[in-house]
Image (cartoon, rainbow, N blue to C red):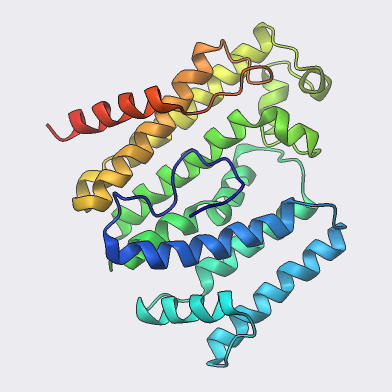
Length: 271
């Protein structure tokens, strides 16, 4: 799917089973456009909330069995019906996007996890629903992968988020390691910052490793997709470490050589 956003991972990639590519594109179009309403352009906070509420009303129409007003939601309604997926996971995403409009700091890790449970985890749960998988153990592993990916994105984007007046590093972690927001504003990388980021990287890595066995449980082409996603997240963490945690001047991104390494590591997992 073409878009103007940098993505660590392709949307509806060739690894996905062909039957899943169309529904994934529809769901991505919903999530991407809703995220943009909350995050892009120069709209006021009230205008952003109003736009997101309009998305919520379209979901209300789907639940009521009424015809949605826009083509996107008509396609979304057909996809949800075909795969017997309710609207709650999509409403969770909208809840997180509205939160992004109003909330720019997180006091502790628990509150950040709550945000991730709505901003990231629904995506993995929808993917499992598309293949008819609802086992609790697999849902928990999916949540671990999705939350880890969200945390990794926060670590990549400290400077980008700061420019949007947002800090996703928990305030309690900043205090614990002696880092203040003026240091983030200056992009100052010292021993305090390195210890903070080392802690955050280790936590995100362990979460990814906890969820990674999901790829073997799912199997098939989707399993391979999940292997690459997990390896990609781990690779970004490696690259954060390789720049000595200076994500201000050398934001880690994945390039062709990284993808070759990720493929090799994903292949080794199944041997």
